[in-house]
Image 1 (cartoon, rainbow, N blue to C red):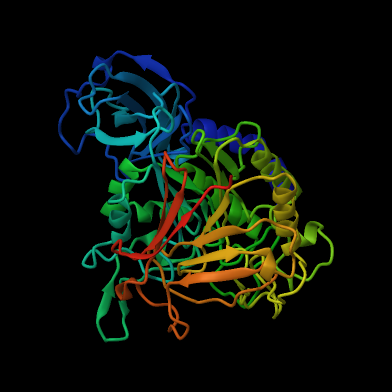
Image 2: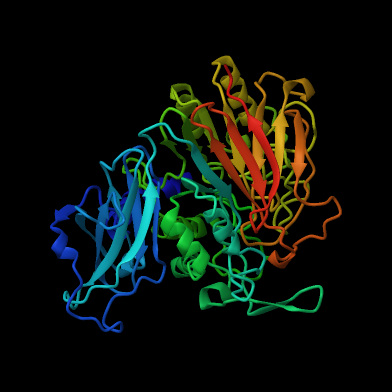
Length: 533
């Protein structure tokens, strides 16, 4: 994977910044340049099948993203009022086949602490007098006057064959999250299930049928770039997600199912897996990474254009640190290495150093680490092409001193304690149920760390599993689990066991309140976390 990342660096940057339509700044146009075109026939106008989306927001910047259906130029208009009075206009990048007609603009100089309203049109390249209908969105910038900060977190979308069932209400959990009016949403991975197909109907235990929307791309495992693009496009068929994305900025990371279940760099798919023609995981991961960058409002790092880990400053109360636990890991193994080397890597040396220094530099009250996977939940790798006794996540299930990937966590937690870094909270997904865990050195095999909380959300719309075994190395005290011990595995969304988290930081007291909710927004668990003095 490392060699692949280096050799494709220049090509990826060119595709990401030109083909995918990233625009830093853009060229300003008078407002009349975005006025409706003369042609009004919908057949002649570009369409916006995925709506609009914002993301990677920081104190005065935001990425605005959309997709059209033909070669066209992205046009963006934005203002600090819903009437678009005194709006600014930008002639954005071209949306071309090389980016699957996706495009984005990086808006800068936005007013701190205010809601920015934006609307997107596309201008047909073949017929410049044909503009699409405008699709409107909004986002709330951090900063400004003292106010509460609210964010949502979850993951795991369209998994195990449970797709968009419109008679069920589609991905109705997005509507439940929207009602909390979060400032942003952390999508903790498994945004797609590239290795899972979706059939038109699935028979439920009670004999009724779960009816899915189906597409050609979701009728086979993803291998080509077009396959992966089709997986990301599928989720935008849901009206709830489009509505949510138009109002709530996304911060996105990936996990395994964006590529293939439990994958790691350098892996080859074994002969027991008959569905794949392309068996090289580096190739599949490169296709997925490109599609993921095309279909999300990522701000591409020109110095490292394939980089997924990044941070976002929301002012004096909050910083968010997004990890990448896929790109730099060693092979899945029994996870019993006695020293931290490339085989025991999970974050990798460079990313581990980055998160240490980023936390050390932070002056915000709260530091939220968004992790692909939980720290102490035991996740075995049961793929037929890996040896038995192989583990997928941090934990190795032995409950003893740190070994294997646990060595990275131990080093990071020790660093946080040594440097008196305060108020670190972890959020994650992956295991398809919700939980709240308090880590305490008094109960741990490894004791050189400060107590902290970890919250698990998900799934958004996938099979419900769990609960997992819990490794005791770091002293986890599991305060809440959203599923019973005797749960029959892979429960459909019809069982209503889909979950998300909401965190709210009080502007006056600086208390962070974290709550876990079901598919319809019912509060299942809540805890107030007081900031360290």
